[in-house]
Length: 469
Image 1 (cartoon, rainbow, N blue to C red):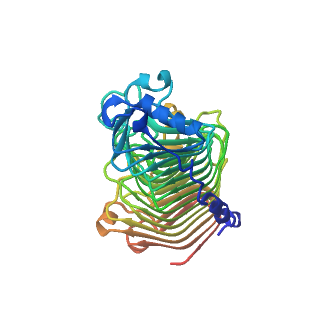
Image 2: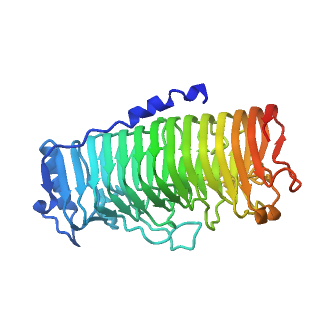
Image 3: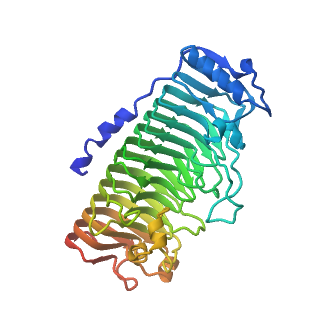
């Protein structure tokens, strides 16, 4: 392991500590404040009254018993737990006037509070069920779209156990929060609804996401820094993910640094990009580790399929150039018709990157004739396309790395079905413009005797060693 990564595990143990439970033993039943559970009555005033009474009493639990509760935005306070019991559904209003005078767009809102929680076995339904997105046949974009949760500048935050359906925008958005735990949460959004992200830690510190099941019409779990504040000490483990975009992602908004991040024991299916790094706004991504990740095949989509994608670029011509360094991937099991694509920039090569114990199975091969890198919302490349969109994406290989320094690739198996190999003769590994690197035990089946292209294809590389079959 890179020496720079040795302290990563210790740092993430801190983020995995059990967070204190919000509130005390005081329980406030929303029915006692006039809430009706028949969905025909608007309950925002009643539920907010229960939340306010709980906060005024010094904290406790606000209870939603079984029933259907329609509400607009609700403001959470310190020491308050909102608990949805089994059989309770909280429905997000689709009426703009139900959201803090029309200015707020989230069902649950908190600013600068601490020890706050959303728990229980109940359901939150955002009612964003219709298809919408440039990639799909869909109705016109709704004028007003809501997310489920926006917590800003909060600490000691817990979301546990709930099921969230049909969020109309980002589902759980944590902005500049500290000590956040999201556990055993199910999110099922419309796969064809653009911007319906699952969980977005944005410039947060000490975040743990564990045992979540997410299906989303955009990114499932995406770390962002929309402002110049870091996103650091994050652990994501034991999650099942399905995304119409990227399942696990860093960026695209990257104004603050990302560091000390671990993803482990996750299963990804039906996602054009399984793991994505989109560095566009000049930050540094460092000390990131992936281990025991299974990435399954993706069904038909008009997005480029890249089971692992890493990219450094400028969002705008005058944007700063960022850096990616000290990233390690271990024990990846990938089934795909496409290939891994990693590309730094000539002025900013990806540094100290390791792939170890990677299996790529290709039951059938995708054509690269029109393949390009996923731009992930970058406007510069749409307005002024450049060669980097396709230069490396269309190289005939199932694992391509370009513009890197101190690369190590070890124990890689690319297993191509005979029919797929007949359709497209491709290398196992393709390297371009790599300064110092090691390829150790990289294999392809069929082997070097089959086809025209070699198992390993290197060009413009120096200080490189190759060992093994």
